[in-house]
Length: 108
Image 1 (tube, rainbow, N blue to C red):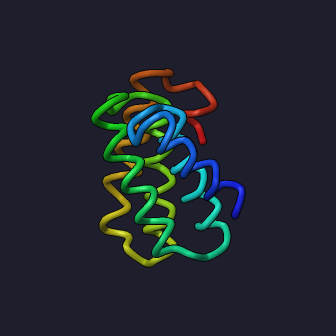
Image 2 (tube, rainbow, N blue to C red):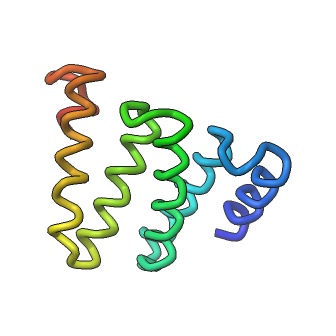
């Protein structure tokens, strides 16, 4: 966790808050925190990454879709099923549009 936090801070300073690699590090830290059960902080980081990814990369970018999915997983773990459901549908639709129905990203 400490190394991911450090990498995220360094990338924010050197690359900026909306650089693809910075956003990837923010999302990776959010994923790690989710795995550790730190759902509140994970959700905040994933929301931050997702908002910037939507603005800079677009809604159908693979990283954006991954962040949407990971935020949905946090929400499911928090019992926020009504908020998670449209995100899961968005991921499915985005994967179908960008990869097709038979692609492994769509099937997962």
